[in-house]
Image 1: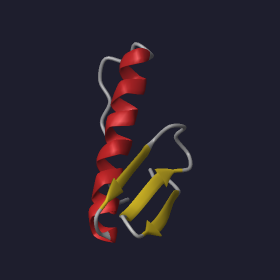
Image 2: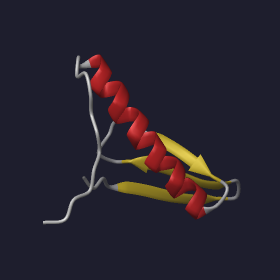
Image 3: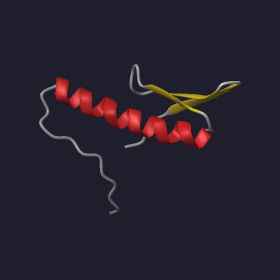
Length: 65
């Protein structure tokens, strides 16, 4: 699944938000660090959402058809 994100560079580094998942934000000292951090934040956000919804298991996979 693809998610839209917004990267903002400031004097302190990079902040990043997932526009599709309310409250899903992260940051990093570099652009690449911020991108890796938002990947983890999205994964964590989805896991918490699944748990709160009573979903027993959720996986994110990429497949080619």
